[in-house]
Length: 394
Image (cartoon, rainbow, N blue to C red; front, side, top):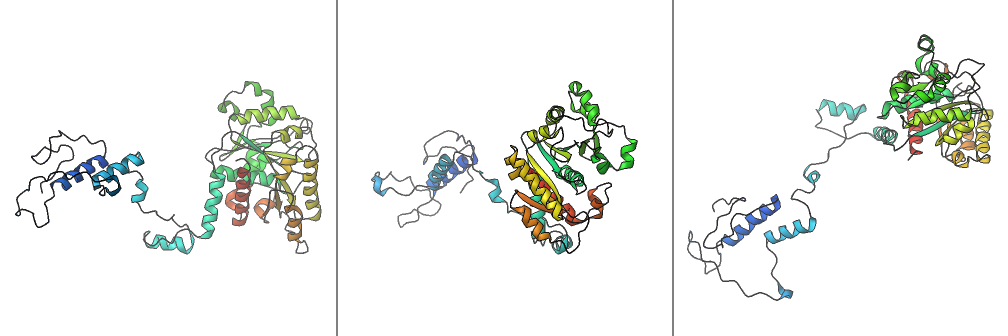
């Protein structure tokens, strides 16, 4: 049979002249070709003519009743399918491509994948899938600006190290950099823990007090950055170091800072310092979307964390208390006499999530906190905290 062009099918004695076939898609062109093939196909019954002779077109048979209509031709079915789908011929390109397993990273699966050039792909392990899920939760796109307050009733139990570790983790996985604010009234050391004391001392001493003096003149991220410090992609506002003015930050002043930060950052962490009654605390709690309550593996630490949640619930912040994340840091490597399970059970039922951070010299020394030197278990804990924070925003 001669090749039939889908763009221009000439009229023959057997086919009424129709002019060029205008096909708007592959489906229409294919349907037209099928129709011509069926119309010009030779007869195969006993009345067929000799080979090579094109038989005359048979007379049209009488129309069959609707109840016994003959099955539709391929062309008619294709046209009907196209009309019903309302789309072109290739509607789901993914159906023509085999779905590939994600590439395994590390371990035996990763080694096998690399040795065979990808020919043997067992897919990621359960551990890698969990890590990938944490990364997905942390990196979710957010609409608006959100703030997490990190607080405790006692100092020295990992509050600031948690703020830095979680802030660096958010910066690692999120497309937009987070901001951490030191609102500690007692000469907080948030920036020192993120940069290292030596680097901070050599830097220009810019604090939250300096920003407040000029907050009305800051109208761009470039202008704001002059009052900030940077630990990689984590942007920080230092607390006031002068003890005579460090406790002077009011709730109204904090809210002005928070409003400015909200214009440029989708995620903010606020290191609140110790206690829940200092001057700025009302503004911090008023603007917080969720809380991290820092605690330690000690009877007193567990009781203080529980007291903090009870105080919040009794002073108009019941939702914040109910959705709080309690972080227990084993900062001092408690002895085996401490029943960690009992402490966790004591706190787990009164918050949204409880996450433990294992003992780690990179956190316990009270100096620079960097993700590179932390134990894998510590980094994993910070990922879980970061994911839980973002969960509370969406």
